[in-house]
Length: 398
Ligand code: HEM
Image 1 (cartoon, rainbow, N blue to C red):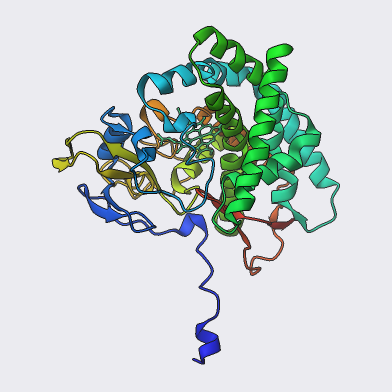
Image 2: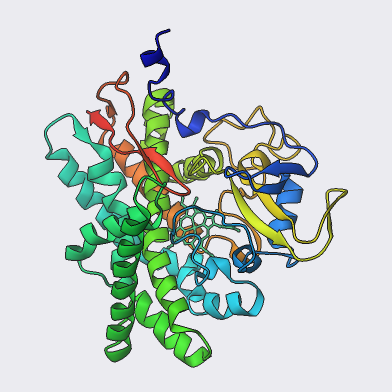
């Protein structure tokens, strides 16, 4: 090999559905990607415990003397974010919108989510082939859904996507660029809150403002982070999931396509299995901080430790998910997946995401029974964020 060859770019990353996971075991010392020492927790029961146990919180991860978890400012590591609050501070924020996302509330939205799916599929059908199923479907679907919920104009979509790419930056953006984009995003969130406070409607942002004002004691900076977090969280994860799911289904699991299109209920089980099996990103876990010495799975994790709860490993724990059915996409899950977390920070949008994925996969397969990757040998160009990775484009024909 010549020196030039050895300097070539690193090997292309594996598709998310092919990432390798070690067998889970007892808690043990590890390192975070930046080299910070941490404890790895990987068995299903242990991960559930850490995510649900109040001795393991998030706020202390951002204490002034804590080691930096990220080199670049980003939204995930914003100390004002609801996700980074514990106990009563967290509950106060979560109460402002928890009623909005119940399965019953989401069931009421189902007809208009289905209408958005149909409209995007009409547009896709009218496109010349091959078409990009990410640009035409996987991205605009969750953006349209969260925008409708929050009462945002379509004219804001490009800006929102641009801010989101910076908010979940993978480190390829300059720090100053990220800070500037986050500043604009916060100003947008603050203006939106002010407008809905003046003229409330029946959208989510008006609901948050009303609930927060009734609750009292909620800092405005936290409300702004909540609104921005919902814009990003409300579409980025679902878009990522859908893009990676389509790469897997069309690339390796075309066998599932006829049944996906024929049976909406079965498509719901496939959505559950895909969320369970295909990680959103390469970081694999959710981090917590141990407030005191705490026993997990027979091992004492010392006070002050950073704990990495590896949901990907736990989702493959053979004690809970038999390897024989792990890849049977139509089999109901044997236990709740940890892909949406657990405990007080359990993903607020889990039911919404599941509904979007179920309808998206079912209707796409029903309307495009011959859908296939336009060129399965085409190398994937990845879009990478702080916590997510998915194809930037995916050419399909039908
Ligand atoms: C397939 C799609 C999605 C996946 C895999 C996902 C996954 C997750 C995970 C792993 C957590 C952290 C749980 C923990 O550490 O305990 C989380 C939290 C959260 N998610 Fe999602 N999510 C998805 C879609 C959504 C959507 C559509 C929304 C919004 C409408 C949303 C809003 C949130 C919020 C607000 C939190 C923070 C909750 C809190 O701190 O109390 N997510 N999500």
